[in-house]
Length: 202
Image 1 (spheres, one colour):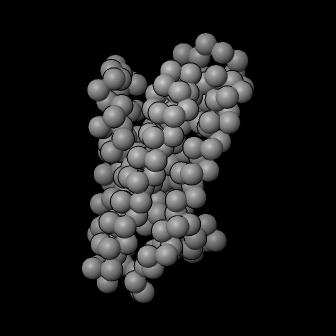
Image 2 (cartoon, rainbow, N blue to C red):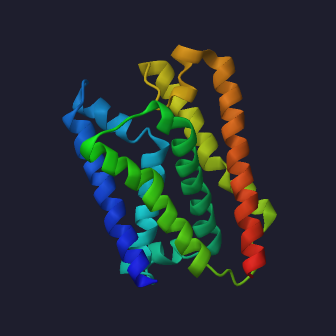
């Protein structure tokens, strides 16, 4: 278990750090706005959450942060989020995005390898003492819903949208609403799936 936690921590922070370096290196706007855009990607925020989770559980599992991330409900919600990151990138974004060199390495880490490592960790090592409750799914959906609202507000002010399926300038609010509903259903599906799996594992 500790090997997996350590590997996840190292790969997570490496990928996040290199991606930050690349976005700064290739920026075409101010430094402050570039940093804001870096943190506007759901994949970045969720991989940051995964890196924190791996790191706390590896370095200081008995700390407040370690105990928080060690809660089965928290571990499972993170599994939902990172699963959606991997799914949407590999199905929706990969066909329209062709990174090269170091960017390709980072993209594979953030969207394929780290999600796979985290899901493996969840499947093998997460054993809830009590069955996870179905009603807890409602609170898990707050993170993606708040994220969508925030990026739409920021996009209306700046004109920048991190993903093409929420780009109001290109596809309009109606299509963004349809796309957002579909993404919410994906989150709901994975939430139901992981809660169901946790109850089977119990």
